[in-house]
Image 1 (cartoon, rainbow over the protein chains, first blue to last red):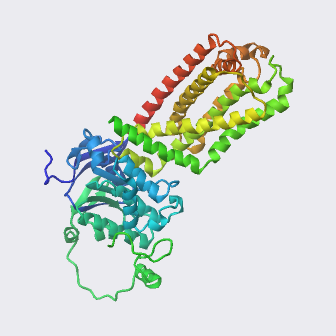
Image 2: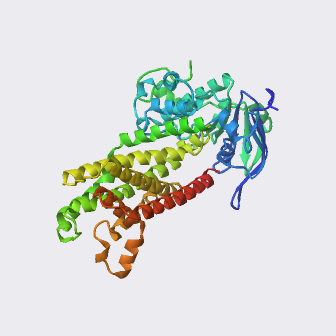
Image 3: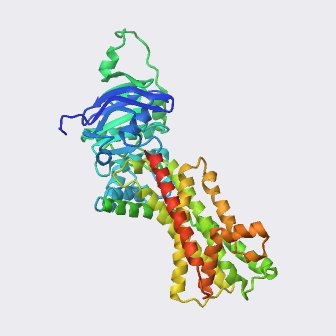
Length: 269
Length: 253
C-alpha cells in the first residue's frame, strides 16, 4: 500500500463548508516526496482550511486526503506521527523558555534525552544565547525560528508551514527561507502557504494557486510563466528596490541575531 | 496508548505547573478574597453572629475553604481559555499524543494550585486561632471531600474554559459558585433564615458539605450528611465530566 513512489501528500476532490459558506470546492493536488510545495492565495482563499484538514485538525466534508500514505480520516494517529504543523500564529509557549519549549515537544514525542535534542536545535537556529530566556521576550523572527525548530523534533517526513513569514521583518524572512530550503535538501517534504508571490518564487518546486475554493493553476515556476504571453524585450533602467536599499544601509543579509550580536544565522551552515 | 497518555499528561502538567510557579499572583489573588472574608467575618461581623459555638473561626473555616476552591477554579477556566486561543493548542492537537492529555493536564494543575491555596488559607486560620482536635482519619476524610469538591468544580470549569468567547466570560461563571456558600450554613446557622431562603439553604449542596466538614473537624457525629454530600459531589462530578468531554470532542473534531 505505502510505496516510496507514493506522493507525500495526496489530495483529491476535497470539499469543506462552514455552515453555508463553501470554502473548498473540489481541491486536487499531489506533493512528491522531498519537495517544497507552495499554496498561494489571497486572504480567505481557504489555504489554512487545507492545512488544518491535512494536519487532522479539521474533518473534510468530501474527498480523499492522505499524508505520508495514511488517510487523514481513518488513520489520523499515523498521520500525526508523520507530520509537524507550524500554524499561522507562532505555536510556542510564551511563559516557558526557548529550551523548555523544545524539551516539551521532545517529551511529548517520547524522544530520549530531550535536553540534548533541545541544545542541538538551539545551536542550529542561533538561539543558544536566548535559550534560558522566556519566549515572551523574543522578537518575531526568533519566535518563528523557535517555532520551526520545535516542528523538526522527531524528524517528521512532512512539515506544514502556514504563512511562515507573515509579520516578519526582511531579515527574519530570509532566515526562515534559508531554514526551509535546508529542510527540503535533507529530504523533508514541505507544504507552505503564503500570500507573498516572491516567497513562492524563492522557495517552491511547485506552486498552486487556490482561488475561490479551487486550484486554478498548478505547476513549476517555469510552467506558470509560460501561461503568460511571451515576454517582450524592453530596456528599462533598474531602480533599486526598497529591500536593496534597506540591506545596503543596514549592511548585512540577515546575519544579525535579533538581540543585536553578530552571529551566524540559523540554517546557512 | 496508555503510556502515551501518561507521558503526554505528565509532560503537559509539568508545563502548566511551570506557568503557576512563574506567575504566583494567581495563587495570591485566589487566596486574597477568602482570607478577607475570614478576617471580616471573624473580627467584624462575627461578634454579632450567634452560632452556638465558642469559636467563630472554627465555625467559618469549612465554608471559606469552599469559597477558596470556587475562586481557584475560575483560573482553571481562564488558563484553559487562553491555551485554546493560542497556536500551541493546535500544535498539541496535531501531535502524536492522546488528545485528552491536554485537558487532564489542566485538571491536575488545578488540583495542585487549589491544594496550595487551601494550605495558605488554613495557615491564616490557624494564626487567627483555628483549632481542631480531629484525628488523622477525620482529616483524611476532610481532605477527601475537598479533593472531590475541587475535582467536580474543575471539570465544571473546563466547560466555560472551552466554550467562552472572552477571558472574562471564562472566569465569570465562578461568581455564582463563590456566592452560593452565603446562602448556606457556611456563615450563619440556617434556622435563623426566613422560610423560602431556609428551604433553599438547607437543600443545596454547600450546606451538607460544610456541615460534614465542620462535624469532622469538631469531632461530632456526621450522620447522614456525609452521604448526601458525597452523592452531590459524585453526581456533579459525573455530569460535569460528561459535558466537558462532549464539549471537548465537539471542539477538536
